[in-house]
Length: 121
Image (cartoon, rainbow, N blue to C red; front, side):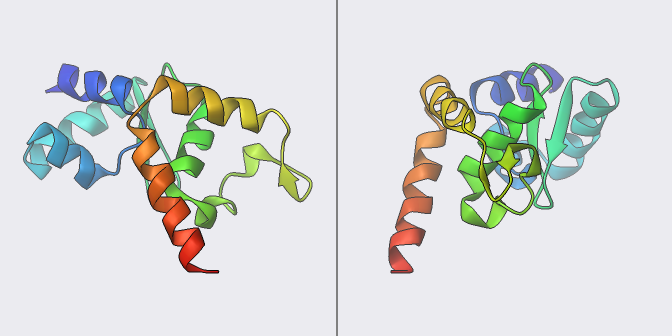
């Protein structure tokens, strides 16, 4: 189970717990046990008040960029490592572009967040 978790997070970082359970067809209790074991071992970490999970190979700043991509504008208050003054830091654009190219699964979240933003106009 632990290798399946790490493999999935390597392909598509930043899922919610329930999304990860669904993608791996894993019982919640089993997934919880193995996920927390991986976190104790330092192989996985989580970010945000609506926790999303990342493999330790992804540095935390990139993790926050992915969190922001997946959560949309509501995550700006939490993504402090990406904020310079009152705006996103200039290098965040490159982090976001790299993440979109490296992880195709993130593209769906971008479209969903764009639709939400457009519905607010």
